[in-house]
Amino acid sequence: MLSRTAWSLYWLGRYVERAEFTARLIEATLRLDALSTRPAGDAAWLSAMKVIEADEDFAKSGKKLTPETVTRFLTISPQPGSVLYCLNAARDNAKAIRTSLSKEAWSAINRAWLLFHGKHTPGKAEEVLTLVTEAEQETRGFEGAIHRMLRNPSSRFIRLGAAIERADNTARLLDVKYHILLPEGESVGGIVDRDQWTTILQTVSAVNAYRWLYREGLKPWLVTELLILRRELPRSLAACAEEVVQHLAAIGGSTGVQGEADRLARARHSRFGETRVSEIIKSGVHEYVEQFLEDNEVLDRAIARQFRFV
Image (tube, rainbow, N blue to C red; front, top):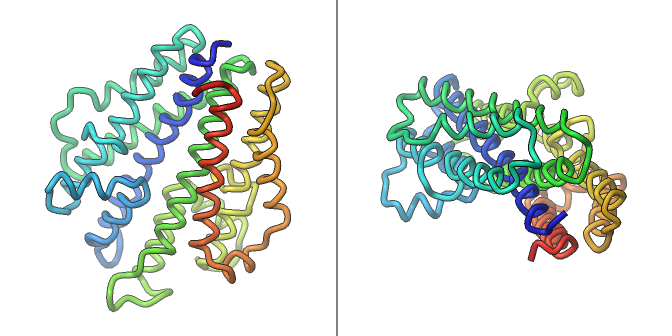
């Protein structure tokens, strides 16, 4: 396989995963704002943009921070971080390796892109919810199509990119919640705090998973354990780390290319078996997540070098 083909497959997986995550984040924040016993306010939308590092680009746009301006920015804006931007990038990569994809995978990408292409406004809140929900359905359809493709390096590179991106997204989501203070006058464990933790679980489709795994009510430390250490949850950091090891090993077995990325991935995976949530909280969740994000970036660069993306 040519390195540029592997590169396109890898980033196709990353951009589709990023598009779905952003769509989920918009949906969860809209529902928090609409259904919460107390409106989420500007803090919720600002934190949503911080999760995907779009807050600085939004500030440069000069727009006033409102639910309408943020949803427009995160859906149909050409700026990095928006759903449209991610789907444009995903579609460009898919076109470059069209013969490596199944008809179903390409169709899912194209349908998701068509939902946003040429739109001048995402509409009102109800229309935005419909739009991002349809985008989620198409990206899930793409994921399903990839799982039904041959288990060869092409599908493995896509899934490897998705696993790297999924870990990054979950870590950033958790970090923003821990690192951004509650609105002034709100208490830890209060209504707003509880709604924010529920929003996090909704964003990673883990509300029912939490209820299955824990009998207690909503507890921040248990949500933290779920998102970091519980391998049963596909979007947890531990589950993503395990998936990365598996895909790298499978690619190495097919191509004979193994090296630094495999070593880093296995070392990171083994550390999860030795970690307890009490230790993470004691040493600082923000510090732990920051280190994970740094390690994930190092691993991403190692993958690029190992497969000669750069």
